[in-house]
Length: 271
Length: 352
Image (cartoon, rainbow over all chains, first blue to last red; front, side):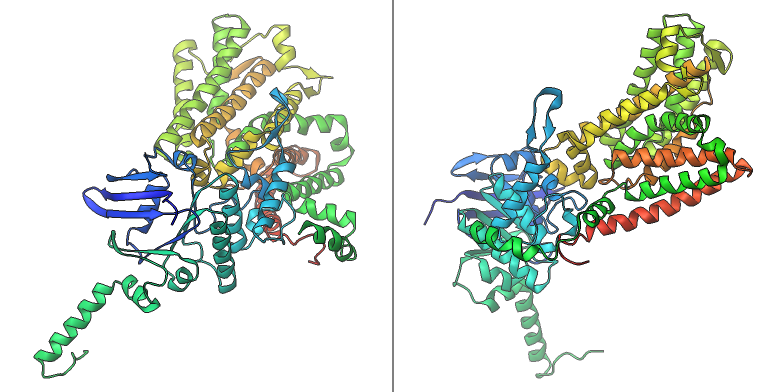
């Protein structure tokens, strides 16, 4: 097994005294897909924001290739090779593909006052990188991002992250807003990124999607790591159970059983 | 992979390829200024027909070009700011304040004209800086912040002018050089401001559409958070743009003061909404992220043609604002349609 690329040790985050993430320890390896599972409000978003430099952790450490790091800004995190792609691709719908691809890192030609944005080159590179991810429908770098489908936008964002040297790719619910075919496409993109040796953190609450591509699974419940296991160690039902707050379901079942015992086997009446 | 692509594509794509004329027409409708171009042509033809020969004469052209030039020097930077997702309403008061600064410093106190001009332009930059800092630091919408500076600065200008000069109208006698640079009438008709407008259009157009900074402006207006995450200094970009619109308004203040040989406290308030109307007719999206300099130029021309063309018809000029109001609404609807068209881009060679 390869050495971990990104290591989290006892990471906690609290806002105004309320623990949102508590004692999360995780390892992410290159060429592996870590699926971060959890219900709404389980602390997934906060954990991602810590990893992508939006919040510093309250306590705990982050290490990249064994070196402790702390991120002062999202820029800082991306400087360390961590790229985050949000649900809608985090791109600019009314900008051309080439322009959007190179926002903040525009290729230029010419010197001094004649230095100008190389729109043609930007468009060509964007189209080429998209093609590398299997998007062949897009051939014009000036085409507006808003005219792409949801899956194509995810592809653009992933292509952009990989092009700019991301070694850890965080995908925040990339399939949540997509149809079945588009979601399958995004899952294929995840596998492509994985093949290139990128460490992928795939945040989702769709167990089927997670089971399809995941190598390693982490389930968050109320900010704590409820389970951390590798592919094949748990069944689909077990994972779903865990995510739906396995404890809560168990508690409910126990409550029902107690009630039945106390009422001669009659289930509680609904009024 | 590339081998079979280059081998197969030409034969497959050739039959469905649309004619070059159809393609260039479509690429035109996919640009932000498509609606504005139709608007400008429509009002121009309209007033050529109803305004008679006088409208088409050089005197007629001068009347709307002069209006367009002064308005355009403000509308271009205001449009840039709107592309970045912000509004600037304070331009009216900046114009008045810079006019009064020039007239008081160089007319009332008799300081050299260059001092008055520099102070007037500096005032525009300072107001822009203040607007920009307040907007970026507090996250209060720029509509409110610049509305506040519009009122505050207008009151400040009025109060201070009365304290210093005892009047609200101060004369200035510009020397020939200043008159030539800012306030001359070429051929007794065309304001020299037309050349200033041209310079602003070329400079800003280059910056927005050719340099990387243009990309930053589109990105800031398109999605501020993503732009920030991509490493763009979003706050500095916005502050610089506010300073740009302040400078534009101050420049028009200087131009008007040297053209009319004096300044009045109430100058310039009409520019507040006229600049926004020009920018919106020009196809800039009010919420940011979309627009072009050519579009703003066309929007400004449309405004000026309607504003002046009405005087060449037999109708009462009271109707001009009615036409402008309707035009604004039609322009916005048309621009929305064209924007949707641009977003529903079909790949080349596929039938629509």
